[in-house]
Length: 190
Image (cartoon, rainbow, N blue to C red):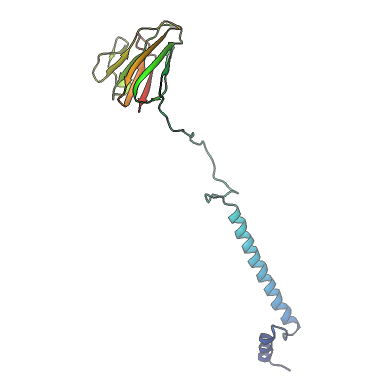
């Protein structure tokens, strides 16, 4: 009969062939269990790796999405003749205009007379000087860049305005009550 040391030595030199019956099966069983555990761990790692996108965010559980900010395209200043629409009680003009001598094609799309004045100032519109229910056209802190004739409904007017100095301008109808009704637009000249 072989001693335990002899069996172990024989097993190490013969690859386990000398291990008697039950001992031989247990070694293979534990090896099989080890292979299964390692394979399962690899599969889990691959699964979670596949469930992430290029930003590292989980695809399986994406982050909650609330209201997303609007995508804002870069503002390109308008060049060339600028169309200006006057109506009750709005001044339709692009929000950003390229600096320079600008031709305004003004039309009254409203049902009552309107006018268009252009002011330059560092003041916010709420701080413009007031007189007789409108802007004091000669008031402190503002510069009247352009003033034209009143336009009857469906009337048009072309006017060249010097907007060569970058900054903030206000396009406004200053007929009594129109400015107070919100008939102005702030324009940035770049």
